Length: 265
Image (cartoon, rainbow, N blue to C red; front, side, top):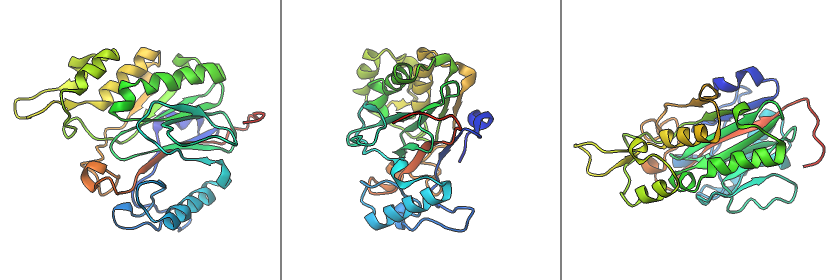
């Protein structure tokens, strides 16, 4: 799927989130199967490594990306955000930033929020994996601060898309999460929902990320949030809660095709 918020800049960048069944318009398709079927690009969730490698090759060929310019981190629900460079260590990384032409940065999700940021002024981008741990650790703030520091980005200029994720109706959590979000400054009454017919609180991830984006200075009109629930649409999008941890992941990313040349990585 693509995002409307970035459409005016489609000559500079491509922002996307993959679906389970990976069919490309050139006739090729992903080769993973079962709970990984068919376009899984994630290398640490138990899929056949050969299938993952083949899927990545298909992805790069279709988008005309050099294989070494595809950056896929090994995520650990941290708040670590890194700027890409040739010798980057992608271990324990849940966010990437870049302003490099021809690069593709992305993150894998299967219920957590994929957050995509683009700065049209400086041709810079960030991709962030925001589950409850990442949100409580302010990974979105850290990603935006890195864009400011590394590229001169201004929060009010940023465009943001938040992709498919688990819905509030499904996302049951324990009360032990509330103090962590309260300590991080989130409005508990707005992001934790309680109902008489629920035995536990439910967390509204999308309300939480919207709060953080606005708090960072991103304009409301520059934010697009998908209403797709991964759990309720697990036939089309990967959901770890529905399919189990050993299943594929949605790959959400940004490909830079800007004609603006950037020196070095």
